[in-house]
Image 1 (cartoon, rainbow, N blue to C red):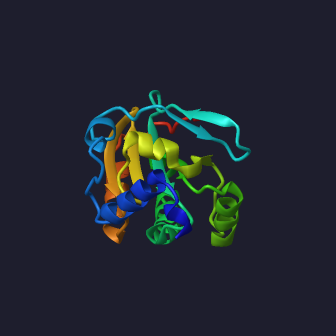
Image 2: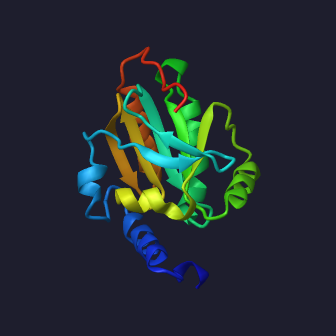
Image 3: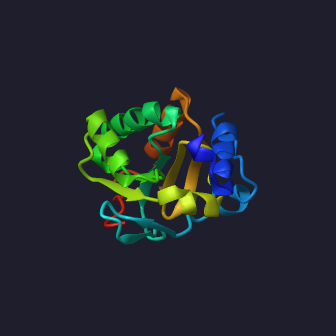
Length: 185
């Protein structure tokens, strides 16, 4: 398999296979860096043109991060389901949506999003080629979903089932009305 050419890719595949069970975190560093109640760490990603873009959520009021890839089958269901559910929320409860892609080929990921015909207006799209930051943080399985409030992880999920979408919406609805979403992450 082409994806298993190096140890990093093998670790990513292992994380994906182990993490698709819902709330199970599959990497030992996850308990330190990405645990519920901890601040979400700064992440060095790239914008749509490959320009470095730090994702700094320390001053964010609300954000929903979805880490995904085109090769991740559960991501194909999670992306549209979570985006539609969040966009259906009232404006005062809607978080900033951040799609964090870990594909090696940025153009392939962009084409995939176009094919899904999602409303990506007001959605932040960032890229992590080869999943370097994903590995560094020891993120949960794929897709990985984080609800961030006030810079703190309020919920984190690895894998995808419809119940996760419901839990994300419940977490967002529990926030105080009127909290403004993150500006220019």
